[in-house]
Length: 310
Image (cartoon, rainbow, N blue to C red; front, side, top):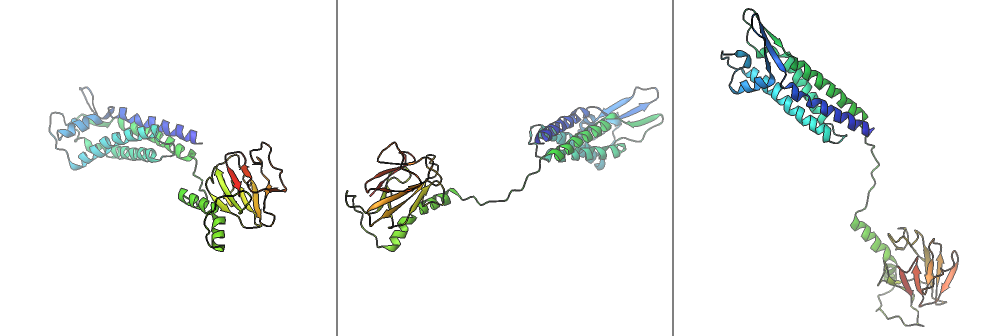
């Protein structure tokens, strides 16, 4: 539908530009027995207005009244300007814009007013003289009317905007804040439960229940784990550790817990891309609890995101 609207709008613009040619067509005329007929266009009226006269006055000087001046300026000069603006706007403007159609109807109204009050622009006829309306008014009215009709078709065929239900889209800063809260929620819970402890370097054989990010999204982060509680990893924002835009990480990738009694980590993998231990090319068994020794380097999906289980 928008393609039709664009076509109607452009054709309407081309039509209204034809009024520029009507600016030079005969607007009024004088017939007299024994003399050649005289014709005056809108251009002649505007030019004569600068000399404060009317073109049909001939050699006689007839002062121009305020009504005649307003009629020439408002119903001859202004429609030309509006026709030019409406034509250009209709051709190059958006199919959804309505401004060109409004201007076209303004032009039509002005030419109808001009046609109705055209007899005020000529003096009283002398014997054997007759003042007549030329074809310019009728032509401009016809062109403006046709152009307005195509403008209406353009309005009818313009697709209506569907009012969508507004959904609150969080700002970038809010997203980053949410990610930061998700990333360190476990750390915060741990901090509330126990007083802060000084960081100790990892010593093999002395597990401490901490996941340390080696590379990827959580590189450099230390994630303390609560004994017996799983933490979930994946791209979906309902996980504890979120891997946004990491295509090798599944939406719900795996879950890991620390078993302090056994001094081991338990991973339950349910991903599409797998999890890998200690650089192995074979993924860990899926959909079952798999124990991992402290010191294991775990890769999530591929070696982009890796952790050491300490």
